[in-house]
Amino acid sequence: MRPLLNSRANEAGFDPTYRFETSWILPPGLLFAVRLILSLYSFVTLFTIFGYNGAHNRAPDSRITFSYFTNLTYWGLAFYLAFSALHSGSYWLKGRPFLAAWPRVFQEAHSIFYTTVVVYPWIVTIVFWALIYSNFVTPFQTWSNTSEHALNSVYAFFEIIFPRTAPPPFLHILPIIVILALYLGLAYLTYFKDHFFVYDFLDNKTHSPGLVTGYCFGILIGAIIVFLIVRYLIVMRVWITETKLGRHGKAVPNAGSPNANEDAEKGFVLSEACPS
Image 1 (cartoon, rainbow, N blue to C red):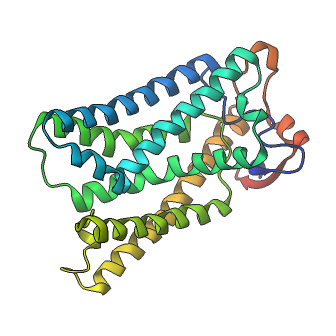
Image 2: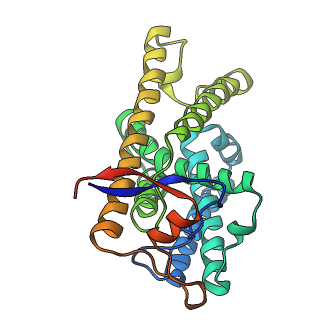
């Protein structure tokens, strides 16, 4: 049995070896470039959809996109990738990321943000293709929906596999659940304000309350399952890349080489184990 890094740091500091900003295989400059490109593509997609709606006299459609969980999570991906590119880029150029100088509350918020972008896209993709998708009429619909409801999971997969991020703590299940609950409130607020249901399975006017409740609890349980799967995928990635392959991270020359020993010395607790 060999120890793996726990995702929590003690009083020695947050993310002491810059796991959020480095990769076990990609050099910092390339990780920065990939994250920047993915962020730019995401923002271009979102604003192109706005432009398309405006050009086709469908400006109200752009406004109501902020009532859809699928669109909100895509905005989240775009912003997370932008911030993570900023942190990776600053580490690449200066040897110390901006994230390291942020107040601890913002550092922890970034950690929770990471958890959401590796969990929610899978839920969006599964729910969209299983419950919502019918057919695409135009090439634009095909492209925009593929970008928001399929490529989103590709972005999540990239963030699970390529950075050195540690497994998210079990405590992060709470914000995952709270955000889903808050979104449920937004969905029904949208109904009372604009008189439509953003998703048919939330329609308690045509579906029985029991069925709607079943859908909601099903998504909640699915979110917890996805969180656990993602968490242990990251556990497995850390075990394979660091314990088995000895790849402790690509660092810039003036920052030293990040490794598991430094993590342990600076506050990461070696508590989990995988079979050798």
